[in-house]
Amino acid sequence: MVVDTRRCIGCMACQVACKAEYDTPLGVNRTWVPYKVTGKYPNVSRKFLPRLCNHCEDPPCVRNCPVEATFVVEDGGFVLQRYERCIGCRSCMAACPYNARFMLPSHRTYTPITNVVDKCTFCFHRVTQNLVPACVQTCIGRSRVFGDINDPNSEVSYLIAKNPTQVLRPEQGTKPHVFYIGADRNQTEFGREGYQKLEVMEQERSAFKKHFNL
Image (cartoon, rainbow, N blue to C red; front, side, top):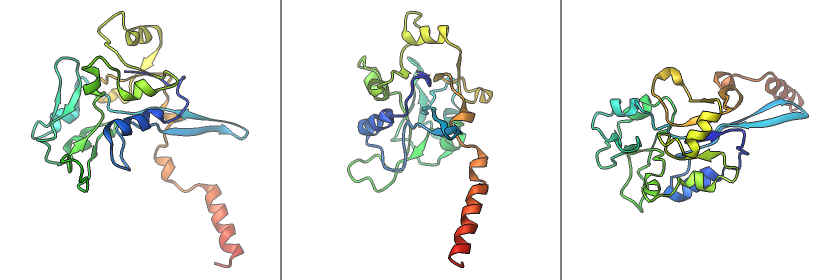
């Protein structure tokens, strides 16, 4: 998959389409779009970076699964999950450097698939029927493009050849199969500083306490 962040408008249609396709529970997502507001008023803008499982060529989740519930499909390189084998130990979640995995809760009554780890599958069931993933189908900005990177005539091969691309966390050596155009994680996601107290918040809190004699 190629994600052109220059074309992403943050409509979240991909996230909604994915939830509709898989009926994922509230609070978790197979794909999500973190963003960050940059600049100073009045010249501000939002930067988006769509995220999902990167379907790595050397996935650490597969190596760390003790029951081989996570595996790589030889034809295509999809990283998939055998729900009937998953014991919910969360080893794959800890091993994934992209935070792309989550636990399905036990309170799901309409399906037996509970208490197991889930993640994006690149819509394997759709791709095997010559359809694109749901998130790609619904992307109104054509930010997401899916195809065969080994086919020189495919759109993904063309985009990678004609544009400078990058992958997330290349230092992990996982060889991800999601390529980004124009991505900058520093401009789209909050780091550890996001958990620190902001001076402006401290000023507002002090003024509030002073006004109400707290």
